Image (cartoon, rainbow, N blue to C red; front, side):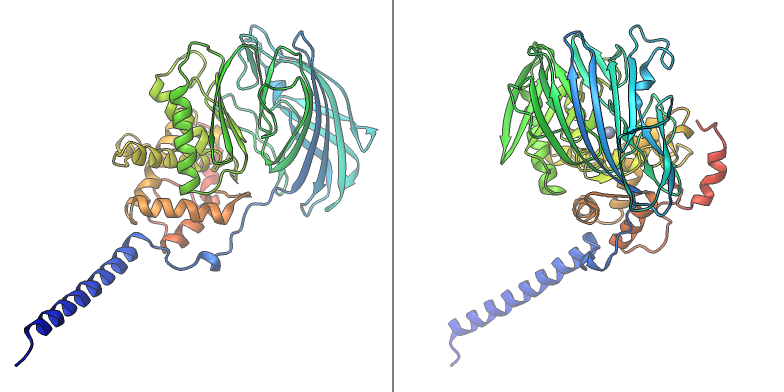
Length: 486
Ligand SMILES: [Zn+2]
């Protein structure tokens, strides 16, 4: 006689094995659909864009009580390109806000350059708009190093863009000479009052400052403490630029996320900033988990000025100065600027030629954060943008209108469509992590970005991209020669 209990045990065992086998296969099948890159990406060789030089900045900044700043900037520059140079090209963006370049400002900036020298010897230079050319007496050969000193004074304009003063607060954005990158020649485009027309490499910056006692200094560096000292030496490493806010009256909230101190400053004492620090905390935590670690021990959010990202610090209050935004829009702006700490702050792209890369990825990451935070379906407004006729990766000066609809809107919608067809949000999340691992502290352009994306998604043709990106530089030429895109 067969033992009934034994039959039951055998049947249950067989059923369990079958279920396990089915689940195992189902999981594998699902992974195969939603996670295109199961292979290691170690066989992918990134080809980052080279900056053509390496630079170290050592700057002293002294502010007089009347708002005049005195700067002694010393920049050590190594030629890492293959060419010899007869000049050095710097952005000197503060010069865009003087009376001659911004005649409509009520109070323009005043700038006096006292002296420029190369390795201690006076150098000839020209300054036109935001382009400072310093002439070499002898050519700078590849691998050679020079130290350029620029001694100058400035006052800030009222009504400037980013470089600005308002209500007794001073915002020092792009306030020192920043060496341009070098490709086959100097990569310096004309300044634009819309978008970010400057591009720099990662550098280390040391600042020694001296400000009047009644002000608070908040900067890119993680070393500025609160309450701040009126004199100090601070430093930031691997940064594309160094931003300084010098605030009069303000309020502050701080909150720690692990060993990172998040600080929200508001120059409006009536503003409720508790919701801002909560969303900053949640998004920083999310981006660290989803993309990779934030690199500093401090993240500052200054609630004033238009929304803008800088390493270690962001500003947010309005889209442009004359309009105020809702509290939800302000929170979303803060999240977007924090996302830039990865896409701009750690993975670089030229915002003149490839603005869609850091803006599109910051928007994608912001959308992903909100979809998890508020438990919403992830969606972008494709219908609004999909029919816009031009690609999203044209140089900024080719968009004479609708620039933001291309750079922020169409770029994110079309990129999201690519992920939607390839596994959706889980693929997009995994992609951002792999992209960050591959390109941290490197520079990408559209071509390199798509090369990695195609590799990751196991795509060989360009059909998912050709309707919204120009992938062949030659195809860009006829468009570039026209100046009349909408
Ligand atoms: Zn942005």
